[in-house]
Image 1 (cartoon, rainbow, N blue to C red):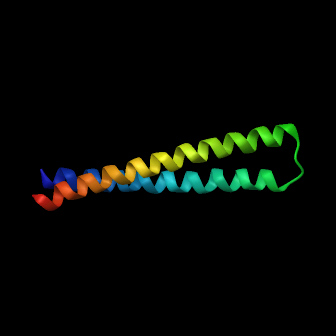
Image 2 (image 1 turned 90 degrees about the vertical axis):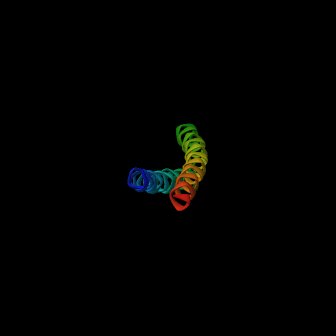
Length: 77
């Protein structure tokens, strides 16, 4: 049982790393769009990227909570 939880923690941690990478990439792209000359299309894409970044941050926070819960379960056994 503990081995299964350990593998689950590894999987969840890799998923958290992927979410963090996507957050940085999309957030950086959104900032880059805000820095250039502003056209309606760039503004739309920048705000869409900002929205997706906020959702990814919330997902990363949720993922972190899930990993901590799994980790405390492994420590108890």
